[in-house]
Image 1: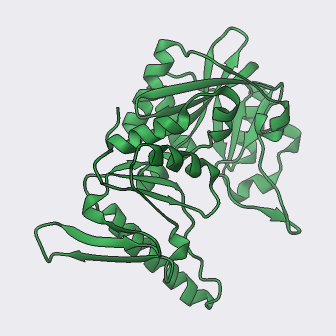
Image 2: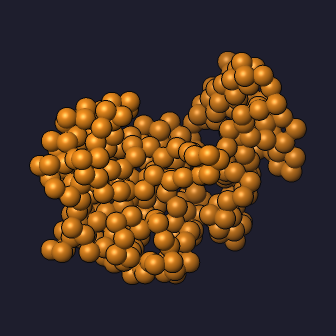
Length: 319
């Protein structure tokens, strides 16, 4: 039986990935307090005091079935929490209330000293900008495809003409719908003839297409690395999961060291990296998702990813 210090798991109501990790924590006898910020009110209470005792922050988070002393938290798994939108309130009241939750509940949790965060939301936010990701990858010696971020149509046309085969990728995934139908921004080929003045509205990311033979999703948990090659023949493998095949692979040592250093630079305990492999066997950097999906890879490969998360959260420090 482990020491009775709980792990906080912040996530939405339906999250099979979090369920897998919680199951592993339960096997280890580690207490778990699961909550979702959207439940603030009857379903979630926070109460914290500052400047009233020897500890900088003292307080509790309470759900209908659990109570946790903030000073006793060993780790926080910040998985997929949903913040309340207070849609039943007027627009200004809803905006005000939502801000109070983010800065009250969120700020109180961020004030805790000692727990391991997987990952700290402020560090995740800082790591989630693709231009900064590209620059850091190159600094660490990873091979980055030529990339242009611009809202200048002339620059975009010049870049596409110079590199021939170019793809367009969104800079940030956001919920989006047309006529009430949800749509997703895939990586798509783009030609110079398609560029018009609408590009001026916002920055776009254009990237030289890698002549790849496959993709590799790399999950790092603490100091443990899991690399899975994904073969599909698709430009963007996310389009059709039924077309994918999987194979566990070993990365070149220099790539492994660079990816570990990448997370260290960003202060992250975990991350999911996407790489492409070309015909010469070279690895190309594509992107980092600080909180990427991995559960389906465990299902297809048998890699013990959930157990690695449980080990890390149990220890409370990277291993």
